[in-house]
Image (cartoon, rainbow, N blue to C red; front, side, top):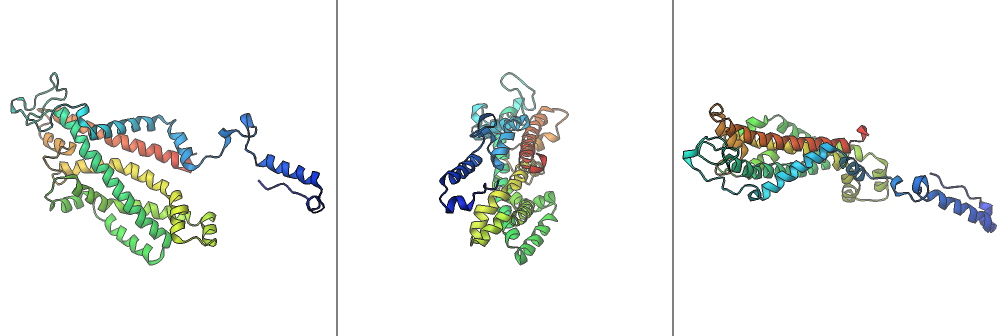
Length: 325
């Protein structure tokens, strides 16, 4: 709102009454509205994008349900002994492929191991791969894509061609080739492979967001005032360009968990003795007629986990997308 006009004569000739009246009007116009529309009402203050998004997320039942499921999965991934007292490696061949029994609600697998315990402990590998791979791909893609979008020129062209090369690699075929030469059965080779093929997608999102933000007036004003490239990137562009990256990364997290299970099912991902839902699904696939419980429980846990992360990503996208308001 423009400031009220103050006559020059009132100031230059010392007309104190007129000047004071004009200044009091200016102060009253600058004050925020109060309760019920009057001055000082905090409910009518302008909210930032993040506070507005959080305001919407707290009232979204999809976000609340998915967040509670993910929180539960993270807790049992860190402390599986809270709900599973046994060992996932303890085997009793005399109970192989048996169904549910008292104390063992999910039955036993082909080696007589408790399926319930293995499902609980399997959450650790899947959650670790999903979170670490998403963090690595988001960090690498955001940095490379942000720099390409900000500086442009040959750096932008080079990064775009490199990203095109990675986009042309089928992810399952790439996993079979890359991970078949890795002897380690831990989560880190799988995380490294997913980061290697996952960063181009996020870099495209980050680049487009930075290109859009850097054309805004506040960035041009900061440049005109002498702000350096580092300050403009960190203080002005990055906070405003990070929302699309967060949305894509949140949805991709569930996809990466499913990818880990797929690679483990094919025998090139996680390997025993690591406990993984993909490994258990692979072991149970050939015995689905005789012992369907061996497949249904780890597959169900995997489906619920992937669905929870995708629902969370959809809720975050709806909250951060100004076009949906």
